[in-house]
Amino acid sequence: MARFAECERNTRETRITASLDIDGTGSCQIATEIPFFDHMLTLFAVHGLFDFQIQARGDIDVDFHHTVEDTGIVLGDLISRTAGDKKGIVRYGYAVTPMDDAIAEVALDLSGRPYLVYDLPATLQPAQGFNAHLAREFFRAVVNSGGVNLHIRVRYGENDHHVTEAVFKSFARALDQATSIDSRIAGVQSTKGRL
Image (cartoon, rainbow, N blue to C red; front, side, top):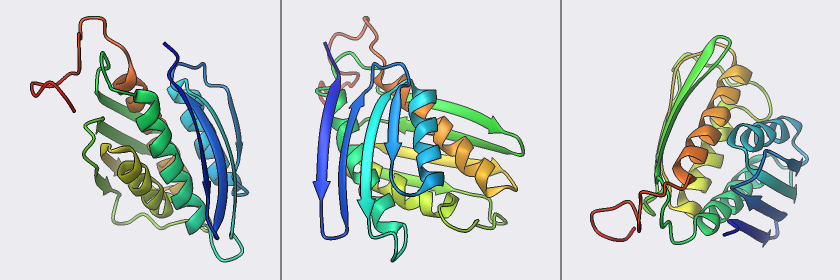
């Protein structure tokens, strides 16, 4: 069964087309007009082994917020649609990823109930442009659009680049685990019988 979806989102602020295959190999084509964001989305695809394509055009002359948020909305929708009825999936994912001075811990549940906890070191100074603090808005959009319960905790880290990279890698690895099929799960992994 192919777990693949395509999505398009057009607003007065952004125009986005994207596709996701959660059973991929890490192949990606990323173009958001925000180079560092492109780098983070590439890490997401490679470390989650997702085939991911996205082309986003937005009002980055205003700032990066609309493009980043709307990209999160699109990715959340793709995650929800590729997970489908969630029969047979592990549902939960967890990953801890170091990146030089930083370490990020991500736990998630594809429960259908959106909730975000985003805990960064209080001393972290955001870099210019796309940074760990703007990434919160991306993940908030993913969570709300995809129905994901997502907890992100960076225990420590001094370099904003390293912190953000560790977060995206951990998110990818946890999502790959959560969307994995386990042949022992007959329906959905819930005592309710549905998610």
